[in-house]
Amino acid sequence: MHRIILVEDDLKLRELTSQFLRNNNLEVLELGDGSDLLQKVSSYSPDLVILDIMLPGKDGLQLCRELRQTFQTPILFMTAKGDNFDQVVGLELGADDYIVKPVEPRLLLARIHAILRRLAVPAEVIDKPQKNPNTLQFDDLHIEKLSRKVKLGKEHIELTSHEFDMLWLLASHASEVIDRDTLYTKIIGREYDGVDRSADVRISRLRKKLKDNAKAPFRIKTIWGKGFFFVADAWKL
Image (tube, rainbow, N blue to C red; front, side):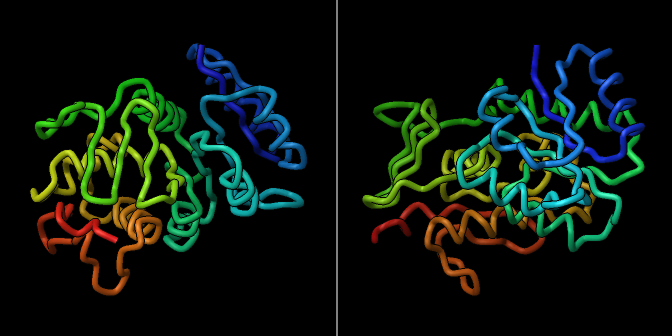
């Protein structure tokens, strides 16, 4: 049974959400604030943290930032604001997805299952011929699928689960354009609606971590109107 930590200060909403998730075969640990969230994540080892943005004390954004310093546990934000600013900032800090309040229970469950499926089954990609199908090497970039480790030169690159899956998908199709529909379906777990900027935020984070040029990317390029392009010969430091 998958384990979830739900951090929500609204008692009624927290209890109703937790009961719904338990009725759908999920184990839930409820927290009213994030004061001991890091300790609970360490001891409870959840498969997912559902984190409200507006919390007493440390807010969800600050808690996400602190979690990402130590843990790669998937994070799903719940936000009542519904504006792009919070959603983008949350994704930039390392959240895996977000959902806007008031939350429709079935939609929340679908988002949870999308994240859990992605973690249980690696994205289905067609690997380029390699000596080891679970390893990709492009000059100084080394990607290990099974251990989910990435090295650029001598530096170990820390990626969230979403970021790693996106990098693996792009690198497995090096020198090909991966369209947004494919990225959203395989990595984010839902269809691209023509407005959602989640993929762009994650690509931006990947570029930053992989020493790409944010203003003029040369390693992971955006092909406007089509998708994203992993440049195979751009990884020599």
